Image (spheres, rainbow, N blue to C red):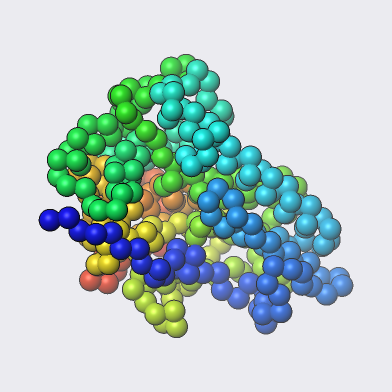
Length: 338
């Protein structure tokens, strides 16, 4: 029997991970403009669509023009990364690698992300695998694939068949393809924060498709507070609030973000080993030293389930997790903030 795909508008990752009380009572006075009295830190909020998602910045500093220039430089840096990581842009470095099957020289950014992805793949026993692209493309059709189609596609999925050749890389199997959807957004957030810091701005918020990092503090020296909503919650239900030392990197994966069927059994997170969506978790939120690491580990956690995910997190310094299964039972590591 073939199930038809159903796209649910539902809750998005952006509403799942929400920033709270950005500037106290003054936060309601602006959207993506300016706020701040003379003698106080100025606040610039800007948003742009890049790499197929919305990028949101909040930059705090003593000078409005300086904040604007820093935001512009950050968006330019993020836009440059689109020419590296986007699998939807045929001119990107990743698309060229997928099309040609090899690259003699990888950019420093692509090599760094590949190395981190391999580390996460090994730690998670292959639950995170950037060669899952053929499966994602298989599910990108109007109906769910049958077992024979999945089995054939699985023959082209195995991160261990990626061959590093000096400064380059080759795809070791015919028909292999790489997607960085589960790690690249986190990396561009890290690079956005790094750009702002290099320009002298330490009190910032950078978010891409729900993956985010906060650094320093809000105006007035108040701590950033991040709300984590239950995956099946109404918008008015209370959230788990993260209020902790910064920088804080957070990423969430969930079955509701891109569902293929109305019952959420089939969604965009696919177990690279079985070719099907994992059945246990509804969402996985991870905090880590970098958003790229949090992003990859959250994706892996959706595949692994709560118990094994907690074990994997212990292999990484300063990584914590909050996992919610489909029955809304919650599991968290001992050090998860909040």
